[in-house]
Image (tube, rainbow, N blue to C red; front, side, top):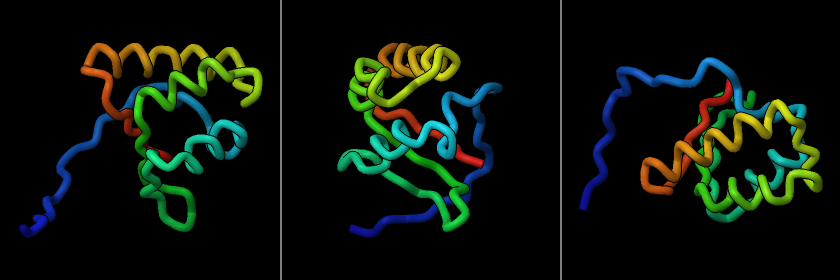
Length: 96
C-alpha cells in the first residue's frame, strides 16, 4: 500500500504557548524521550511534536518532578481537557 503526501494549506495554533521546549527542559525531555511521542522538528528545533493525551496526563500528575510552573500547568490542563473532549487521542504542538 502506498502512502501519499499532501501539501498542507493551513495550520492553526493557539494564541498562547502551552510550554517552552528550551525553558521547560525536564518536561520536554519527558515528552521527547517517551516512546509514544513523535518528534518532527528540524535541527533548529522548529516543527511539530505529537504526544498521546495519556502522556500529557502523566506529566501533569508529575508536575513537581518536571518543574512545571503555574502558567504552563494552566495551558497543559486545557490541552488535556481539549484532547479528552475530542476523543482522547493525540495532541499536536507546533514549535517555533
